[in-house]
Length: 115
Image (tube, rainbow, N blue to C red; front, side):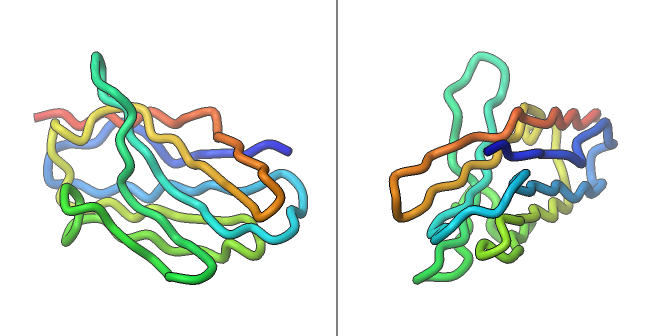
């Protein structure tokens, strides 16, 4: 099983990007999909999640600017990012978990925000 992440790119401050992530094959009982960011020289941080029991959730650092959506039953998740700043620059990763212990990551998509 692979996760295919896409949608990154170079954008000016204040701009928007929409990231997409999709599983390469059908996965049973997905209960978690999330987006993470790793900025240069920093640890990977959680940004947003969708769970089967709790719905969408955003971390305070991106609340009001980012939106997570998708259909985790189908293994797809999106991250709409608005009002981007240079501090949003980094590699963005999607993650998927299911009830049987599967825990897999996408390959990362690069987002660069210029000032």
